[in-house]
Length: 358
Image 1 (cartoon, rainbow, N blue to C red):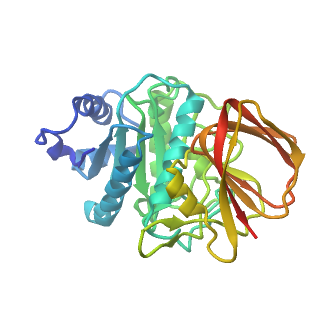
Image 2: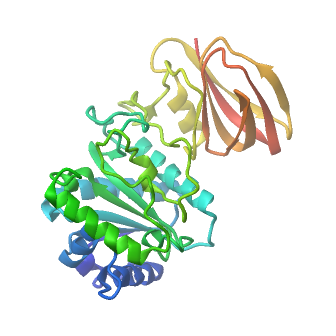
């Protein structure tokens, strides 16, 4: 992976060939005079050389995610020197096209993994609940507006790219620009006018100004190709109990006081890493490894303590509150005490870690 600015792109010899190809397509979109790209900040930032770019070989490789986290960290540390039109763009190596749902899951998995790799705590001024109107994805103590583009977007051309692509815009670039200011109204009109020409679908109803009580920022991150389908609940979850082990550098993240059932997607990790992560921060507890044969069923039951299950291999379907949720390798399940639940392992069985706090 390489992180670079516009001028450096043509001087570095170790940018992968696929990177040069996708960047060429990206630059044509940014510089088109006959069909102006709707994101005014992005276009101006590209012309000024204040954008930064990264090229990632794999969205699922642990090393690639660590590289992405490091590149994003370094960018955020220099971003204010680049001016108000700056953004960080991550291109992912082209691969066989996925469905919208698969790309959406991949996108949220990446944000979740970046959060887990973040060396700093979640900002105190940013609510941790995505359903709060002031929530924003944050990394390295910086709130960031995030936009995802995919190669399968067609009608919503403003979200189409040659390859899977994520853009990170620091929240501070929008300081002084809101729907209540003359500059904000002009900005909004310019963007909306361009969207009407650029896209073959009307602007998504979730698009709105940050800070309005009806706004949910996460809904603007990944937009489908029409306005009829959207995710009902944000897949992202911020962990507020991250502590460091001074000798190993492992993050201990067992949230002992959680009260709602939820699933973190694509957490990943080796058996050793997962075991260390799920050891309780305080008090007494333990972890165990369990293996279920294919289609092994556990009838509805409850536990007197909170439990966290982490899928190492295979898959399992959990029935909770009348809803069936299928979890795959790398997913982490938070199961509050006294929750009625049952499960059925998948066709390849399921190997998972269970963490219990007494």
